[in-house]
Length: 242
View 1 (cartoon, rainbow, N blue to C red):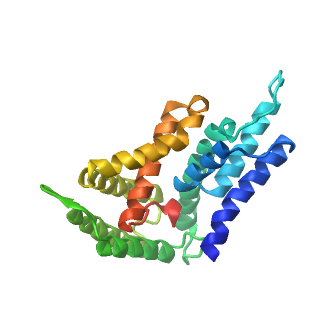
View 2 (spheres, helix red, strand yellow; view 1 turned 90 degrees about the horizontal axis):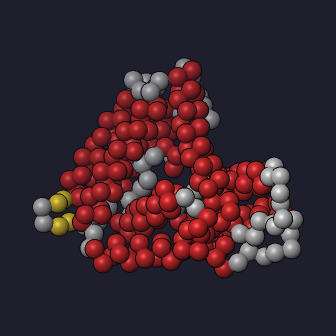
């Protein structure tokens, strides 16, 4: 029930924010709902979407000529993705400062013990996952190697060896994720990847003119990655998902 509430809350909060900033008078379209679904599937936090909507409307209000109202969430897409990236960088930076200045390990969600537990839990999920394999490529070996690395990093966090280098920890986790994704893409049958990419393309199609190519590529990549993680029961390794 909790997950279901959060799922629908994500959509309703975004709808209410958009209509409030627009001034009402227009309901979200089917394409708008598809874009929200894409954001959620890509793992973009609700707060980032709400910030992005505010930013887009604030910038629009500063324009000298406003002959038309904003009629689609697609107008806010660039600001939403920028807000999500800013939140991730801010979260990691704040965590580094908390850990570096804390002698007792007390923080606001980034205590050494909590980070270590997150890393060990991710390692357990990697070891328990039922992963694909193909000739000459063993995803299992990569997953087990990554799990061992996560356990080592957890020990370093607990011993405070990495207490002032949380940005380096996040970079390390990003590298592990990229290696795992590359292995999954190589081992998963082509037709499955094509199907997932086609789904992403269909959902993103109405917004291509409103989004930069780099942002479309980012959303497509996140969409495919999320579907692969769901398929094999794998966790996100970034501290952003802790």
